[in-house]
Structures are given as structure tokens and as C-alpha cells.
Image (cartoon, rainbow, N blue to C red; front, side, top):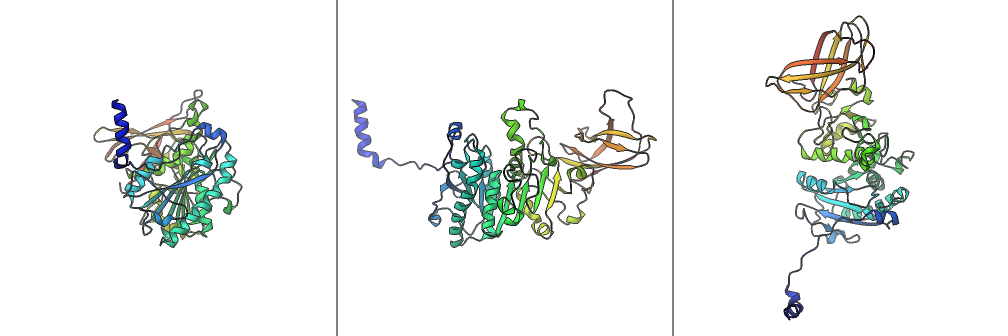
Length: 426
């Protein structure tokens, strides 16, 4: 009887009960959807500082009906890539929160999970141009409402980087900026500039390559191309199949986490313009005087501070740097300059240990490439630490050949110098 009266009460006063607004969310699918395949559907979810937690879904043919879109502010699109499992990207919440806290912008999450979720990678690739066409339709309406192409910034992950490139190509490269986070390599490596992301697709194009030997794109694509740890194997990522699914995606995703780290501003990841990773490791590209007064470029969201300087150069720029194995990924680099006086040639590895006056000790990360030492010849090499020490009281070096057999040689040092690259005034 009580339940009956409650039911009658609800029916009589239903219209007086406040309705809870449901927030549009990123499409959440599963492996079953991937196996059966999904038809392309695109939704744009808008977040601003006025609605940071509950997105507003933009209406495709009536963008101006938006309650929160402010076309006088920067518009940042975030475009994900291939989704073989259908789940939302793990980094989605972080990039939304960090971008909105960094700047007062219109943040648009481009959800094409229906279309990207499939075990058939070719199908996802074919959908990229269709997504770009839909995005152009949205941008066209924003332009009519007062948006400037200069204020449009697209951040594309994997396939999303090429989608951003296709949109930029449709506007003849007049978009303000495109950031490509490890642009997809498979099925794109042989494409001409108009068939992939290219430096001509926006006024400024910065690219982070973190998996060039597998899922990423190896050659330069932007105004400036960053290659962390050489662009291939990232520290902390599994090196064998025993690492499970992480073995396949860890290096590829590292580009995203490096970009997120730049938004946290706990430390700046400095990159060194250079022709190759080998030259960088040999200490040939650590002089940033050509970039004064701004010094070397930094990775990530604030890379466009070097926009005017980089655009003025006729050819794309490659920049290399090393990282630690976990967030915030910063390394503290030193240039080690050694003169040896062994009569015979020595070949091996140097490890540096520094101690400050408080007794703190840090050890360098050993280079993967052996150095050659000759009598009275100076050798320069890059060495990095996961932690920075200021007032150094002691420097010690260890020399090893890493061989288990054969004679154990000592390296006789005539002179050595250690120079901080992060703090060159020391």
C-alpha cells in the first residue's frame, strides 16, 4: 500500500522534481565494438572555464547556438587517434584540466571514437579525411561568427595529427598552430605532403616523435621536430613482449605525457637543435648562442615562443634531448670535457658522480655509446642526471669497458671540466 501511494505521489508531482542535467561524455566503447567495427560519428565536446567539468556538445550545423563558445578567445582542438580497444584515451582528463588551467580558452575535444574503434587500421585511416571535412564545417561557422584562423590551434595524437594536417591544408596553412604528438607512421610514410601532416599546414607546426621505429613517423614533419631520447625507445617502457600491451603503446604514448608535463611547468624540457641524435650525444650541439636571448627551444605547449625564429629558417629544425623515465621527465644535462694521457687508445664508458656540500650524491645515466680516448686529445660528451645539484663540492668519474674478459685498463685523466647546460652561468 505504501509503495502504491509513493507511485501515485511521483506521478502527480513528477513535473515539480528538478531534472538533473546530464553532461555529454566521450564515447565509451569496448573490444566487442572494435571486432564488429563502428560507423563514423563525430561529436565535439566544448569545455571552457565557465563549464570545466560538464561539456557542451556543439551542434554541427548551428555552432553559434553554443552557450559557452567565445569566438574572441583561442580555440584549441584535441584530436585522438586509432582506438583498437574502444576505451577513451587515458590522458583525456589530464589534458582537459591542464589546458584550461594554463590558459582561458575554448577547449574542444574531438570525439570520433565511432570510426576510430576498429581492429581494421585501414578503415580508421580512411575515416581521417572524413573527420577533417566535418571539422572544417565547424570551423567555417566559427569564422563567420568572428573567429580568426590565427587563434585556431589543433593538437593531434597519432592519426589525429594527420587529421589536423588535413584541416590545415584545407585552409592553405593559415591555422595558427598544429601540434603533432607522435604522428602515425603506418600507411603515411610514403604519402606526399598533402596526404599527411606537413609543416605547411599551419603557421607553426611542432611535432614530438617518440616511436619512430614502430607506430610513429620518422622523418621531420613540422617547423620544428622534437626527438626525445632519439625518437625510438623511451626510458621506462618495456623492451620485450613480456611487458604486455604496454610494450606496443608505451613509446607511442610517451609523446602525449611529455606534452602534458610541459603544461605542469614543474621544469622546462630543453631541446638542442642538431642534425642527429649521435651528434647531440657527442656534445656537438649544446651551444645555444644562436638562439639568444631565448636560448634553446623548450618542448611542448610553450614551444611557440620560438615561432618567429623558427619560421625565419628556410628548412625544418630537428631538436634532440634526453628524458628520465617518469613524470616530469626532465634531465639535468652537463657537458663533460676530458683530456686523457694514456699512450694507448682506450675505448669505454664514463659514469659521473657529483656530490654537493650537503653530502647529496647523484650519479649520471650512462651513455649507450662507448667513447674513444686518445693521448692528449680532448673528448666532449653529454652526461645527464635525474636530479639537479647546485653547489657541487666533488666530482668523481668511473671508467669501464663493460667487457667480462680481457685486461682491465685504467683511464688517466690530465684535465676535466663539467659544465651545466641547464644552468650555464654556474
